[in-house]
Image 1 (cartoon, helix red, strand yellow):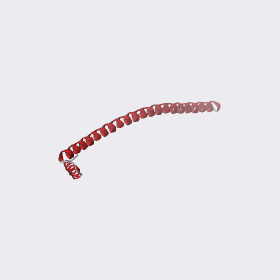
Image 2 (cartoon, rainbow, N blue to C red; image 1 turned 90 degrees about the vertical axis):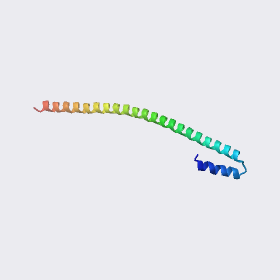
Image 3 (spheres, rainbow, N blue to C red; image 1 turned 120 degrees about the horizontal axis):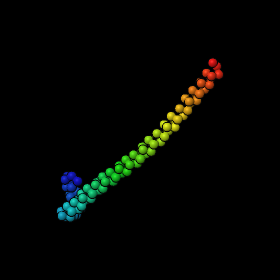
Image 4 (cartoon, rainbow, N blue to C red; image 1 turned 45 degrees about the horizontal axis):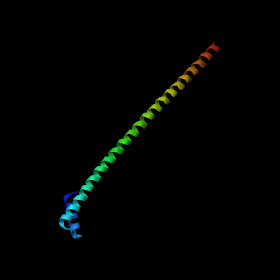
Length: 97
């Protein structure tokens, strides 16, 4: 918490009836709580980012595997079409010399 904010809080607490020591202690507790909550939020965001990265990596590897299998299937089909076409061409050439 910036020093100006802490001074504003001290003034507010003192105007509400707290003596200077009580107001200072309360402002310190609020500041420490604020800092702790920021650290907790940073840790939470970091752990969530790590989890998301792991999920994305596993999804990408799964997609890569499926894409490779799909490409193999497509290659086999294309090869089959070529073999069939060559077979038909050879048959036509033998029938009509």
